[in-house]
Image (cartoon, rainbow, N blue to C red):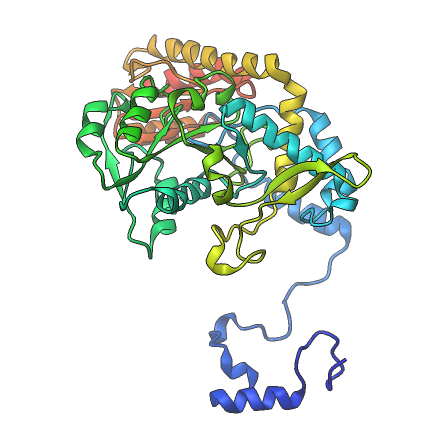
Length: 443
């Protein structure tokens, strides 16, 4: 207990006065420059309400939101989450759990996270996976800083697709700001990597080559092994971006030479979360002690029983700062748990079936739109998963607005290009969507 009676303040009134004197301030408030118009004046200005009144007001506010069927994708995907995931994940021992620092009381949760890591290992073919990252963008940023640490020779350039989602590129550039790393683009050909253009840009100064499968436009990258070989020839790290459902169907990243796999696991287990996700991160054994975030390991206790524990924690608050590889601090364990539950519920065959459905739905929807006069779909002569780009003779922006008025949301990705994403959750609305598309095109 301190002199002022507070059990939390780490110094007395005399200590406070001494520190203020040392910095030339009269009051603690002088240390903070808070504009008057946003400074708390002691009242919130919120009238008290009953529970019924609050529910009514919140409901009225939410009712003002647009009620749209979202054929949106580009990294955020809406898949049906089975009710068993909600019911199990909402158990209090999961929902209220913090980071599993005490293995003696968290064996169940730790085992679930170990299973999540094991699922990523099976899907990627790489032997090491961590149990949580913020999202796909930060996972990509962490891969870049890992590449700088592990590359045998000097180098400063990171090569990414010119069609990389602007949000992911922005996070990557923020990650490398302050270092000597620079982010550069390589060209695309029909939405896939232009291998000749990439080869022209790869040299000994490249520390990392990044590719995606599927690409941001939904196309399947067809020459991943060649990209991996280019990176290997120049001693650069080959980082592949994907997602947990796509990995069930597409080429195994380890088989095409991927050193690190990043992406978003929230395609399953979470639903359309409007920006909230969970990043996946898997890599080769060589980088085990460089992996950011947390890893769950398995061993035996004193009675020879299998036991799980957090291990090889490489963030700043756990080890000496100069040895830390990451400042990722958020606990994404509950989200990883939901992903693991959804993957387990689907099983291997269910995962493949759902991924195949995403290929079929994209193909069939593109064919239906292509039958509309003034529309060509898909723009890219490639295989697609979930989403594809459509060309419209009319400008895209007003068509997107007209579709919104009809109750459907899509992306405008060019002056005459609209991107459409279809999953099993939007399949029941396809007939209405195609009819609305034809109507707005012919207005």
